[in-house]
Length: 459
Ligand code: PMP
Image (cartoon, rainbow, N blue to C red):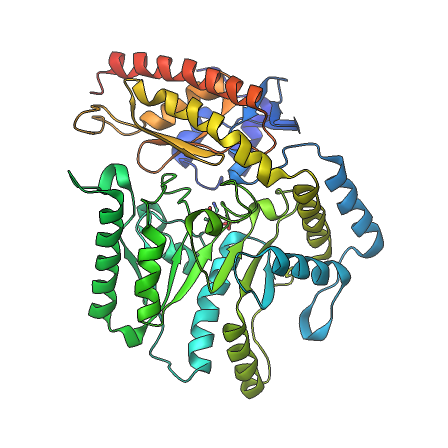
């Protein structure tokens, strides 16, 4: 192993890295990135990488977008900060909320701003509880999320997340949060079962859970349209309509977590439109500003809003809000981002490029390492298996992580996620030629990974 550079040594001596094997990081050190342009980023040695995960599923308009830089700078010059507590307001927060209401995938009444997806989903949990207290049914508090769902890392949103690493040793989940099945066709469908039958079975399991818990205690269900960090899981046909029939029957709110799918990822403005979701409330973040500023939001329908107004009449104040809720610079950048999406028809472009992306990703289905190659819009994944027939895993974990590191050497940044899966989620501005370049780099890394798996005897 080469000795760590000066910058790498300083990193190891100072930083706790999120979502990192901290012990291993002490040995390997960081990849230090320095600048970006378009879909590419460059490290401190000048080597270029295609950012195949758009940062963390967020840099939709890529890097070096001068309009976004200018929007931030102009707002900083004009009014760098004012809060929106206690009746204060400002132009960018109002304009952004209006815009979000206009494009939302449901009848949205009001918008609450946060700085991240975790804060948005944490707010969702608090609003569900507040809402049911307001309606005089304090026992209706349970929220059903899904195994392998990802909703963030604060205490409540990590509890919604259905992944072992987010619960183990953190003493989570908190009470009143439970997890139903993951709608993963590749792993979950039984022999001879159609996608529609699988969806109906999952909806029936959900109904049984609600009945077991007592419908009067179940308040909400939360889901990502396509699961991201839990494995890029595209639900089977008819999944959300079947699930929502159950939710309606028992007066359970539908919370749509659009933190990854929102703003074009699936080829529609929101994932809800591709997958037939009828949400009561919606969480957004990430691509809302193309990650040029940290900003998220919760959008709620009129019924939820009215209950909140009534409750705050009793309590005197709505006791929730972040210093940076509706931060004017973040809001100004988000307004500009949405303007660019519209002007450049980014969503239409994603829909047009999606078949090419799907062809290139699904083209890896024949590779000996790949059990399932899936794609929708501009998000995809390769799920790696030791045996394509039995879908059995490798004798040791870490094959997808190895593949990600081989990609990195080939000049492609991707991310190993739950279930020996490699996620692919490029900036939405990627061209078809760049998709080919991405896939070519990925193909070379896959072949090297196959040789490594054989040499290590991992089957
Ligand atoms: N929801 C989803 C669907 C996400 O993918 C993420 C982040 N990956 C979050 C919520 C949490 O967002 P943040 O990291 O901004 O807190």
